[in-house]
Image 1: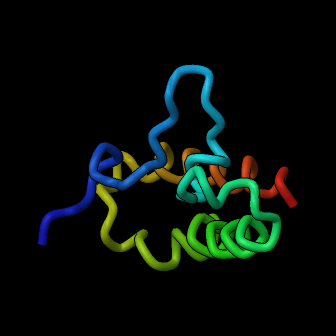
Image 2: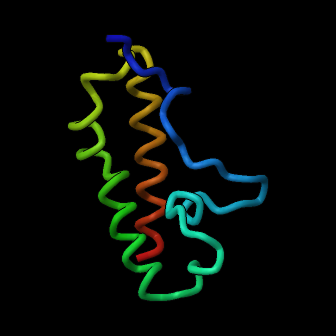
Length: 85
């Protein structure tokens, strides 16, 4: 099987001036203001983007030369989400 490169991971797409954490939550705009829905989405996103869990799940699939860059991006996303808690 082919190894996954950095560009092949489904990173949150952040528009100019956008918010990384908000994009990582993947909430429809009409649900973003609902506190209960947002709290649940934050918990789910933190599980998805937790650096240790992510690396445990995907490290064997990663292109070795991209692993540090991938880990740094996952850590950035996780830190942005943690700031919402």
